[in-house]
Length: 382
Image (cartoon, rainbow, N blue to C red; front, side):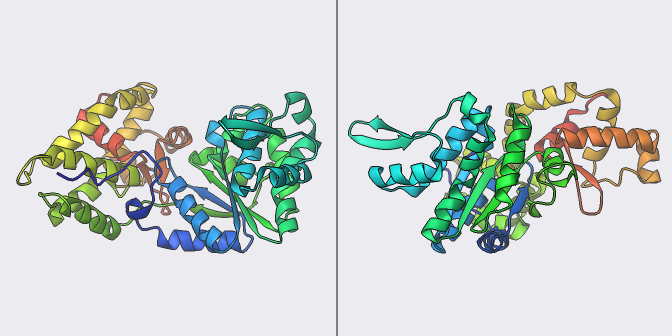
């Protein structure tokens, strides 16, 4: 039997990258035109895979592309090292030329040659905290790509993934102020800030007191639409001896709501359930779904136990709907939720914890589709 055709939990490309043509075009055009963007979605919506596809498109246009993942950072020293080495790795010049480039871009510190493999030299930059507390050094770092782009007469783009983590890095406010102070003067470089914690991203880019207030175009990444999933899932199962029927594919998409990670995960688990079978069975989807929920239930229980009674009652009420107009009189009375003011406080808490999301119509829903399913199936007490 063929290998499992469904992939989740890693960045994807090629045939595993589904749809997003419109988003790729919009983001590529904005960044190529010098527009900064703020790209938000809940975790596991495929932001990183999407921005890497955008990077491929930018490179085709001869635009330099640099990527820094803030999720890995815990200090200003690590930021300095990661950012400078991201620049170095992308430039890919001979060592002697690279040395001169780095000295011109970031003159305050001395790069050093390291040998990661025998006979294979590379340049690495690091700096002590005592030097990094001087804003001049950080400014040199944040101006480095602009200086190189100006010198090479090229455009450039820098991506900061999970940028909301700057809020928890020590000296994070200094980092943000230095970034903004440098970036606002750049003519050749556009910036993309990716985030998965909505309340933090909004505070960074929507708070009038924030250095990054209104610093770019906001793009909210949605789930992937049904028609793209249907084609992809059908193609995956067609490579096996047990193809998926249209109603099964519809059932998978309804369960996951088009959530990229969970749609791949559920399709993958169904494939595993059917491995070795000669025909599909109606129970396959339920078997696969319960297997996934069983694996994740400890995480769901931990989230549930961290909520008070009012939070739980509200969450159970919302989980029973596709999306809920929680402030409507009918909804409040049906679920005995109490006053609108009390509901608002609970909503704000659940949104801040990225448990609830809000639609354009100001209705609320459980962000994690399998957590929602677990709440409904478990028959939980408040």
